[in-house]
Each structure stands twice: as C-alpha cells, then as structure tokens.
Image 1 (cartoon, rainbow, N blue to C red):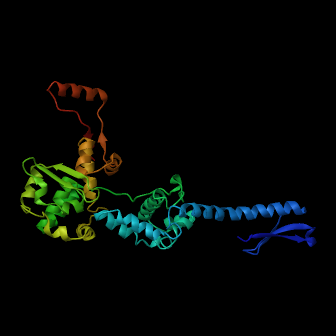
Image 2 (image 1 turned 60 degrees about the vertical axis):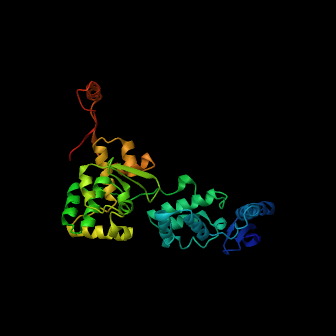
Image 3 (image 1 turned 135 degrees about the vertical axis):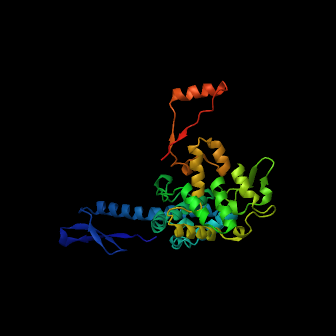
Length: 351
C-alpha cells in the first residue's frame, strides 16, 4: 500500500517541514524544523491510514479459511438467504422489504467491505420499516459470521419510532357495519370486533376451526404459527350460524390479498369520514376492551396469539383503568371468598 502522506521542506518558510496529502494535494505545517520529528509525525499519519485497511485484509484472510464466500458475498445474497428461512406472510414481508429504495446502495456491496456509515445513510434515506428490517438483516449477518463484528453497535442504532396508532371505537364500528351491504364483509367486520383476530387469520378461518360443543375457535396464526384459542359467546355464535357450515367461512375474502382487504376497508372509512383506523385497529380495540374489563393478561395473550407480554402491552397501552384502593380490594376479595360477592377487578374509566 502506497503511503498517502509525504514530507516537504520549505526554506522560505523559516526552514519548517510540511506534510503533503498526495490524495487531495493539500499541505499543512508540521510546526517543527527537526527532520526526525517531522518524519515520525508523517509515519504515524501513514500508519493510521494503513491500519484499518490492514485489519480488514487480516480479517478476510482468517475468515476465508472457513468461508469461501466471504470475499464475494453481498447484502443481496444475505437478504435472499434470510428470506428463504421465512414462510407464508413473513416471507412475503421480507420480499417486499427487499424492494425498499433505501436498500439500493447497500445490496450490491460486499458485506465484509461495508463501512458502518453506509448503513447509517440507508437508515436516513428510509422509513421505520427500513430501520426494522435492516437491523434484523445486520444481526442475521453477525450471527452467521458473515460479519466479524457489528457495523453499528446495538446501542447506536436509531430508535424505532412507530406512528401513533389507535383502536377503532364502538361507534365507528357500528357505522361501518350498518352501512355495509355485503353480508360476507359485514360478518367479517363483526367477527374482527368480537375476536380481535388479524385480518389474514380471520379471512382464512374454516368451519372446521369451530368447536360448537365447547364454543371455541382455534387456528394456527399465519404470522407466527402459534395456536390461538378463542372462546365465543352467543353474539358471535349468531354471526357464525349465518356463515357456511363447511369449508371457508369467507370464500371471497380468503382469495383477496391483505392489501386489497385493507383498501376496501379504508374506502368504507373514507365514505363515513372515519380517520386514523385500519383493519388492524380491531386488534387494538379488542386488547383495550380486555384491559378495561379486567380480563387477565394471560387470557388476552392467548386470544390474540401473542408470544410476548411486551407486545400485548403495546396493544393495550392506551386503555385507562381505575384501580380500587387496597382496602376496598381486600374487602371485596374476602366477600368473594365467603361466597357473598363477586371477584374484584379493576373498573374502566368511562370517558
């Protein structure tokens, strides 16, 4: 590797030594007339320039011994490999994420030669989704030993700031259902309110998922594969009785892409002047209703099919609950134990 800096002597400047950057052509004074001191300063500058490149070459030499693709593997290869490990809706999400315009300067770059500044540039160009998927892709490369060290330390990743989301209200839901003339869509929105299921899971329900003997709906979630188990009441039973007794409950909506179902719902909201809600808002609404009613969190998590308490708390973070005093709670609990009262629960604050 050629040295980037060299020394020149300027007698017209009082015999001062100068350092010249051969890359930019700029020069600056070393503030010394001693040739040995000047030489040491310039050597130090050249070493500092040479060391990062040398470190990378050493790392590549070691890694090449166990991974033949280390010198040619790009971020495009990495995102394809990560996508292939996903299934169903998750795989579709990754394929969509790979088309993000912010990834354009990153994907063709060799992973081992990528500077951390490029990842920060991608984050600045992208959206919240870019932050989420780039973080996962970066961590995947570290776990696969395709990166010898993290390009961005965990604490230095920009925080993910999601847009504020809200639940659909009962009044808004009633307006949508009242105006909906298509019986299949009407039943779809009604079940979304009562069950809190995601639109993809709800659209894929079949009559065989219903256990009428125990009043239970059970199915495997599209996103995680976990089993969601929901017990339904008479209100839901009345809706289910009007749906097909065998096969798909929603024959048309089952064949429609999730984006198209969301668009159809948005069109109905626009027609009614309802803003700030999507089909996913039904899950927020269910979680908030559950918390306000004092529904145990473990039951709510089972119903929503969540694997993490943190996820469920995010859904229900806006619910307002009025907590009874400890003395009042103890009295109610004692009365309940004696069979002369009801089990104490938190009461919802009525806005």
